[in-house]
Length: 170
Image 1 (cartoon, rainbow, N blue to C red):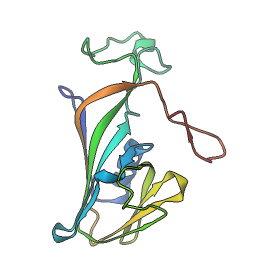
Image 2: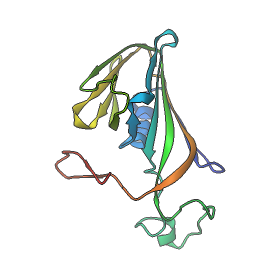
Image 3: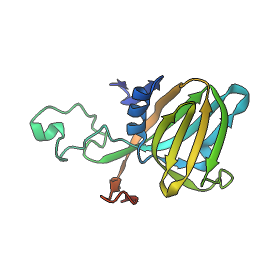
Image 4: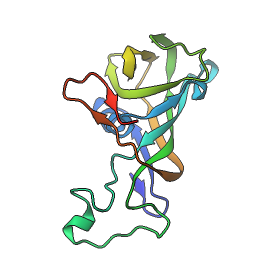
């Protein structure tokens, strides 16, 4: 799953269980609309995301290894005491059609906030805050996620209210 030297994540989904793991990793990712593209000739949908690193727990946060007295393996410049975001690529292969509702893909300067991904038969739905959906028709589920570059610190930790009405703390 992760490369210890580079701390990058690489995942592949071929079924609904695998997709659930990718969806959890991408929850609250920020997506510049300019970085969403369907390559119809290659039957490929690609997206560059700015994902929150949910799998990391900063030193001092409840549940972190530092709280349990364990040694930390962070580099000196790794921002181990802060929340992080990282650039991430998402690639969906075997895509035969793309539709969207509530998302204007022509507004290239806007950002979307990804909530989750769900498979429904031959449809892969990407749900965004505000009710937007990008729906991919796939002949077979084939999804790849890969972190790119180094993470950076962020002071904003996504915080969902109990009513599920949205995301706070961006």
